[in-house]
Image (tube, rainbow, N blue to C red):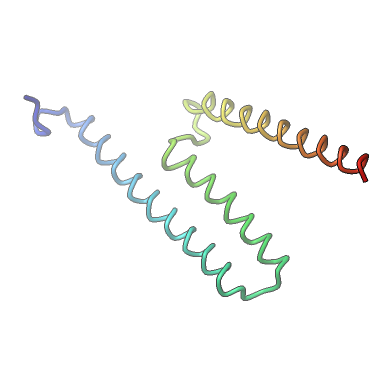
Length: 111
């Protein structure tokens, strides 16, 4: 059986760094979620500011998850992964926007 003490120094540091990043990621995700819930519950500003704030927090949460859980950042070694995610997001955005456009067009024709 393999023991953690048998690991090379570089692999042990890599595991420690990955665990640290996971803990930081979890803490940040929890904090962002709590801020979003607090904004929604207490509503310190108007409704439009609340919607923009929640939208901004959602985008920040997505970026946070990309960085700390999917390990996608702007380093050269991860650019291919980032391009894949961005292309997938573009395709999903086009599909959603096209669907909304078609449904709105049908709604206008029926009314």
